[in-house]
Image 1 (cartoon, rainbow, N blue to C red):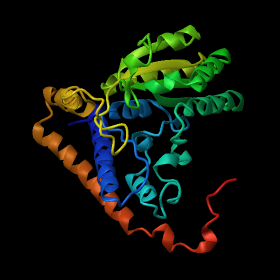
Image 2: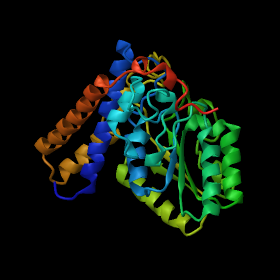
Image 3: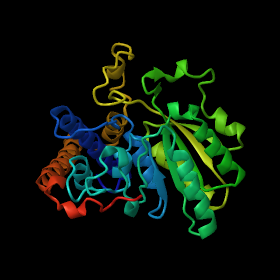
Length: 319
């Protein structure tokens, strides 16, 4: 398989997919309790984008953020431990999915308020402009968040002050349970940031190589003090908006129609056509499966919060 970077991208995307599948099973079985939004189908965006960012850069995701955390290098063990309320989780088991955050990995968390990550990321970008850190911030949000006033205000502020921030709209065509076509008259979402003076581009969000190239170019431009950039990444989700979503709003056969264009199947086919055998591809999947299975088993063996001392109840709490 040589040094083909796409192989690493494939492995990373498969690990995210398997992690999310395991989270789904934990949620259904009741081992994990809480609101859960899975990243299945959108893996190429986080993996491609994070491959283009530096260690000192900062990522702010939505509540569909498990994949972003993993793409930033947060170990699956720490993420499982957090979801299962175990010590050793990224927030010591106190935050769960809704408050995933791992600053040591440049991942500044999910946000349960639609679109709220954008103004927070702009604040970090404003700080970067004054602390001479050369830091770039990236904020990811869904197509539905484009209708939040805070997102427009964040983009306008970033444009006005030439801030080093990348806005990534993960357009999976559904604003929670409503098709984006029923939410807006103009479906080309790049038109909005362009009206604010922000360069904007539509990208195939299922093509991990295209995503990495786009973000790499943006990072280089921003580090040369060019100001904010916007990308509308076209993709789809292969699960409901949340675990338990009956998905009555989806046309029959829609998910099945994605099987050939979703990012993992697409990259497997591309690598296969470039000489990587089916056996080698299956080996990548098997290794990823072992990694995720091992992480989950280890997380389940960690002490739960009920086993910690009462005196620790105020630890990791800020007020």
